[in-house]
Length: 248
Image (cartoon, rainbow, N blue to C red; front, side, top):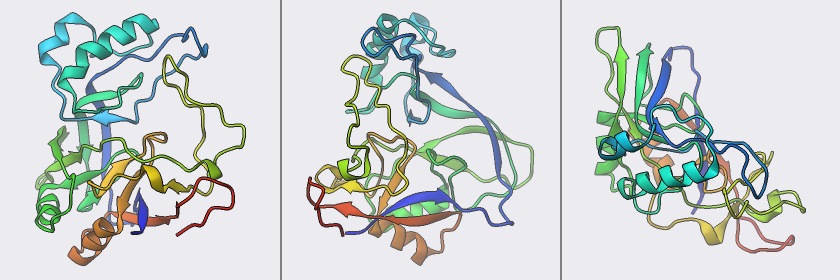
């Protein structure tokens, strides 16, 4: 099986622009007592989440940095309302996209590398192909134009990790308290075959939230159906765990 990183295409006919926010979110962490970092990562999102039942118990609408104890309290309030196994890092975005949108969008759209938007008709075509793990969530984007598209956001669960061969040899592990994994995207990403999920055809990398990866099945279906707006860049996969590993 081959895998691809999904990136937004930028042909001249697509003028789509989104000025967005997110309805809710977890706060960042103000100075983790273990790694001493102040951080939050808004690139990971769960748009299906409805925090209405706990919204009065914490300020999820303005998730600025908080002491780690407050972050952990808010995370546990939100956890039962999130998808099973959701990776709830500091700063994670929750609930639908809100804001203004305008212009022309492709059938698929990735305004940022960590979003994957799809028009409803395109999603229905992909689901009819039997592709796995495609959950489209409504957005609350306001268009000031006629014939505005119905844009859904795919909810992408975290799975798959980068292979150690594409990381610095002295790469530090994630912080055991706040989870911060201080890495930059490698110039030549390499997926760890042992961590790739077998039950979904598109997913967000667990340790690199700005990378959306899909299977060859997903890429082929999009091309066959003529679904435009994104491009598929091949990414190699390592089958072993040493520097002499073979790559497919």
